[in-house]
Length: 243
Ligand code: ADP
Ligand code: MG
Image (cartoon, rainbow, N blue to C red; front, side):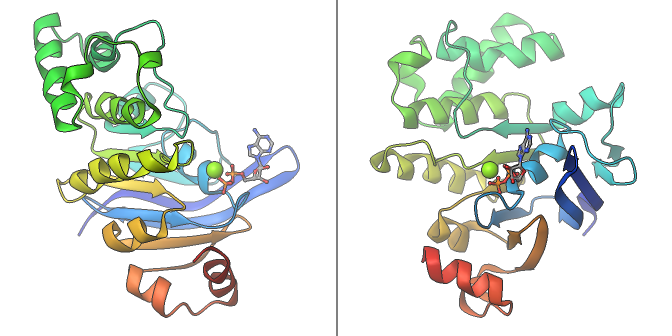
């Protein structure tokens, strides 16, 4: 299958500190990829490079749907195709839930208010919070806010959804409701790249699990291979520590 995302020789440094050492990774249309690994291994940096939230070395190359990811006019096109969900929700606190979800289609796509509202209400229903539409983010639980953030990301009908530890800031009792929404999304055709510490979820949902350490991909494969038959010592010791 043709790759929707191609990453080749991805290098990234903060000053003289090298964070990514030349990552090669292709992700297929509709594929669900979970990225695991210890804190500081470069997981967030990797996925933030995909929509150029982080700049990267000039010799590195990323494409999304054939579009080169680099500063310039084409970047808006890439960002319209790539939705992102963060650990800390990042909703606009002064806007209602409904407005949060309507905003990007209206601003970026110039959608009509009535159309944007209809679409937003559908999405809120899809993530199970249609009754919260007129509340403000601060009036919602963390799990509800993260589901709004997912609806907001979906509003632009992205081909790719990036998730950076979407459940790490949640109280334990709310993790399940967010993972359930993500499970429903997986398999709908949207390509998902998910940084997560939820190993049970990764095992269940991922087509491919990528283990990173020290700014490199150490090992990648189907969940059964990575979780049940890891080959690399670093993968084994990481899994031993977290499972
Ligand atoms: P992970 O998501 O796997 O925990 P990150 O991608 O956030 O790892 O970070 C990888 C490395 O880059 C870490 O050592 C981190 O301290 C460093 N780093 C991340 N962001 C910055 C930044 N803005 N400035 C300097 N160093 C950073
Ligand atoms: Mg991170």
